[in-house]
Image 1 (cartoon, rainbow, N blue to C red):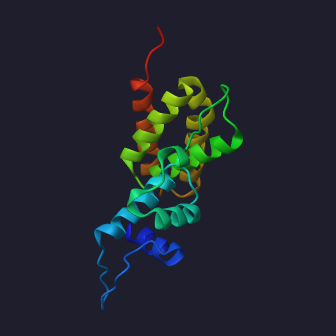
Image 2: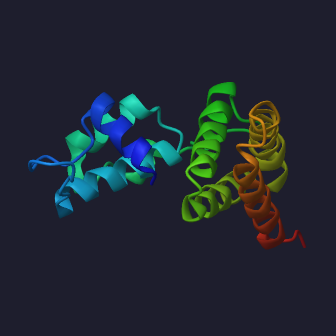
Length: 165
């Protein structure tokens, strides 16, 4: 994670080392790191940062159940609701901005496995690619690595998707 994100999360949400020493260095304990990892996992799955911070601090290293924070709830039909689409796309985009390959792979795999290739592509992957592409286009090439990482992981997930009989 970038130092800027760590400082921001510490100032905004209290996600940081509990014990402080004099000087400019922060000393992270295993418990502090577990809360930070839970915060990362939750934001990668589409939970807004303020809500993720509350849950990460409350649940600590054990974290909430995967069912409670799943980015894509079980679909009752082929199309996802707009809220589910936004949450899933937000989770993918946040993982891409953090350059978190493991989270991207996990989120893409679960979206395809849970909703099928066509629904995941139309409802989640394409809108996320468009959003990241617009951000890159308007940022003066600052997010080109984010767009490249996301598109590479999507292409990999598509290649790995099971083929219909």
